[in-house]
View 1: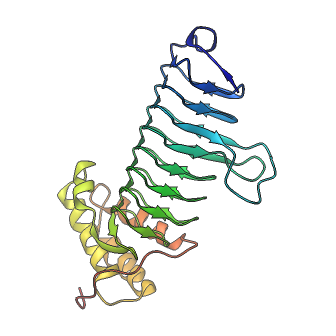
View 2: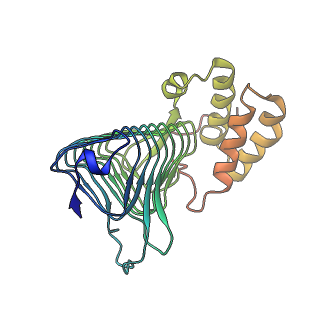
Length: 267
């Protein structure tokens, strides 16, 4: 790695602090800010208007005993913010990448491990740790000091509370917290902030109750959603969200987090 200054290396207007280290294989998009003592190394591609606060480290070798020096990448979209000492490591496995979308807000001391995939508009709070192969859907919110086990997924617009331990997939639109983690409710506040209206919220509340409060097993709950809720929904009034919820659950290799706060009987 060699230090670079904005003039020779960033004609696109990015600003790189003189103490930052930018590797020769790093591609930095226009309008980025790279703060003091940042390290960007390895094969890293960064889009436009990203901000890296002091001490951020991107593109380090994966913390994986199977890694043998193969060429892998970190690919970061545009408009992301990385606060102090956040880290994101290259993938393991030839041709693989750790991938992040756009407009994510990654707070101080967050670790994003090898082969993670982070969508768009996610918030990852201070000290949260994402193990290898973790996936975050668009708009996911991860609380401070939460730990996500490798290969876990958190669905779109779901929230994981602070200090939680996640070792199963968290379905879209849900609020989960605890150690062990439990799905507590629908993520109503997050959904409203994302512009989801009351007609859609009403449909998602029913789906939550079917899965977590009706005393059904997962197969029965999915059948109830597909037979009863989906036909009664409509485009723009919860149908898309129900389809996303069912698809996420059916495609879960680890299984979803089914621990809730207890059944209330038939819905």
